[in-house]
Amino acid sequence: MKFFVQRLQPRFGFSSIELLMVLSLSAIVLGGMVVSYGTLVRSQPQIAGVVKVPLDTTRLTRFYGEADLKRQDTASAPSFGSLALAEELREQFYHDVMSATAVFCLPRQGDNTWKPSYIKYNPDTDEELDTSQKFRAHVIRVAGVASSLYQNYRNPGASSEKDLPNLSVFILSYSKMSGYLKVLAIYDIDVIRFVEKSQPLGFHASVKRYTDPAGPPAGVDYNLIFSGGYSVFYPPANPAAQVEADMATDGFTPLFVTFERYTRLAVRESTAIDRFKLAAERPFYFIWWPDPSARHLGQQKNTASPTTPLGAYNHMAGRTSFMFTVPVFPAL
View 1 (cartoon, rainbow, N blue to C red):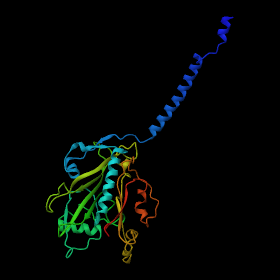
View 2 (tube, rainbow, N blue to C red; view 1 turned 60 degrees about the horizontal axis):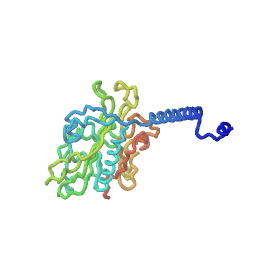
View 3 (cartoon, rainbow, N blue to C red; view 1 turned 90 degrees about the vertical axis):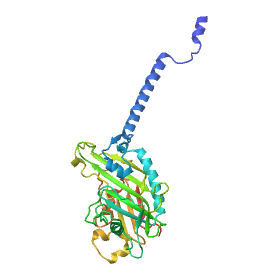
View 4 (cartoon, rainbow, N blue to C red; view 1 turned 120 degrees about the vertical axis):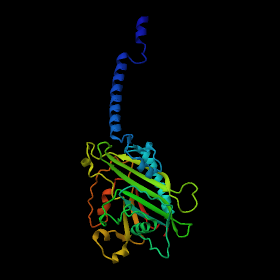
């Protein structure tokens, strides 16, 4: 009887069979979660690798003021480290524009080799500088800048020059020196295509800011120096690209467009020019920077009518989060 009573006492815990079933179900659930998580992770942008871009010492010196070969190591897009630097530079750009008296965009084919702190200007004898084209003509005349450095470019389709891959944005400010314009900062945007067999296939894109050295030096005969920026390397949009032809449609243009005052419609020109004469009060730019969070610089469709301004830049929509609306004369 004593044995029988002991058998009727309630049991606590789980049997080995129950534990085995629970462990099996847990393994199935956890396995499914791991597979799902792996799928999600693989579908997200990967942490950027580093590409050794063959920027020669001459170009490095023009870009950064020194031939530091370590700067050849460039994060591959998408790069969120470069994105953080770009966000910081964006804030600085806004600050510079708010302090500016004038902003002029000069497109380039090659590197920018001219970074002055002051530019000669006599308001009594020199022409009024109300467009980027007049600013270009002025610096060629008074500063001896080669006419081939900055191109005579008005807008996409409005100039004989095709859309150019590089741009220098001159931000002028109030000057303490009589007879001179003060260059507060220069922003250089360079998008360099690499296609040789010995080179990584893709684009090295960078935005760099140049401003006064610490001090700054006395007088007007000194150059601005590199003070910050970001760079990123974009692989071809076609992941199977092997030669230049495989990335022929990749690129990042236009880097800017200019909206002129509508009163200029009093002088009728071509459709490509007149479509940008829309500014009610003051002329302004749309400016685009390469976005380090983008995967590539592949071509986007442009469905806008070529007779409208959108026909020149509609394909830039969605390609970058770094788009700026900048007045030509912020102080006015």
